[in-house]
Image 1: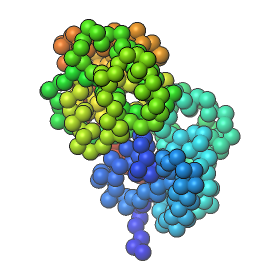
Image 2: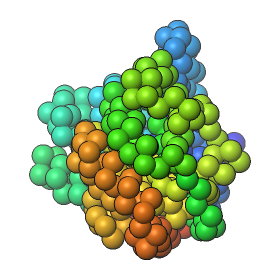
Image 3: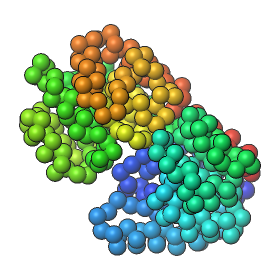
Image 4: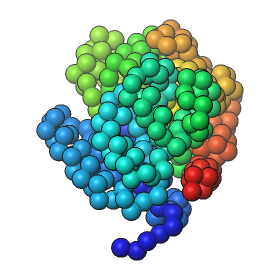
Amino acid sequence: MRKYKNKVVFIGDSRKMKGGVSSVMKILETSSLWGKYHCKWIETQINSPNKFHKILYLFQGIIKGIFIIPQFNIVHFQTTPGKGMKTLFPLFLYTLLWRKKIIVQLHMGNQIESHINDLSFRFWVQYSDQILFLGHTWEEKIKPYLPKQIKTDFIYNPVHTQIKQSNHEKYFLYTAYFNENKGCDIFLKAFAKITSNYPDWKLIMCGVGDIKLIKKWIKECKLEGKVEMPGWVEGEKKHLLFTHAGAYCMTSYQEGLPMSVLEAMSYGVPVISTPVGCLPEILQHEHSVLFFNFGNSEELAYCMERIINDNNLRKQLSDEEYNITQNYFSVEKITQKLEYIYNSLL
């Protein structure tokens, strides 16, 4: 096999995973970084209701790692504290054995505080060469708890810049892997408060997860016929939904730097969100986003009405978000920073 001076192998979720880590990896895979550092992607985790399938997929990833890791200079783990780190622990130890440079990119925001004292988290941190956070906020907050010799930095998630939308249709878009953390009930309760005043508006909820619970909440909120659920969307269908959305809503309690919000911003779709994860670091209330407090359906309903009724506000949010995307989250800017980090380690 041909030898290269600088080679980076990524270890993280499967391409088939429905989540932020996989989305980030698929974007990096199309960037100039991939060829320049002869990158490879070892897929280790997958969404599946079948536990045996998940274990088998992880085992296959570990076997691939045993053969691939020795050929690379840098091993770049894309993971989360807790379950993610425990799952990848065998490959982390194997990487240490080969004395490779280790980067650990933590895909968490406000959840990370509960893991600071975990033994597995502290072990990973102590023996890594570089820890990357999703934003400056969390780097500064967690850094005092880390060993002083550990290099830390932050790197935002990349997103492809789209052609800015000009044709808004009357729907609030929502995408998620439906679970308790996502606050789906808040989204539905908020819209139920205003729907009688705006009969032309509807909700489009894209995703998978606890569909039965979502349908139960739709019935309780008397929103039958007002909510479309197209499932998990990708490709052209996803592109069209974001292109024409009247606004995008995020109701989560815990996130890092949610890719769905960045994607909405990349289309110039006005965003209504909880001040979750790193979003307050980059977005300003009433200037580039409408923030509402966690779990507060009254505030969310008020924000929805403002989006519906105030064309000037909607345009301002759209313009500001689109500019922020280009200035901070473009693939080119993120890959430039990764190159700097790789070169500093090599």
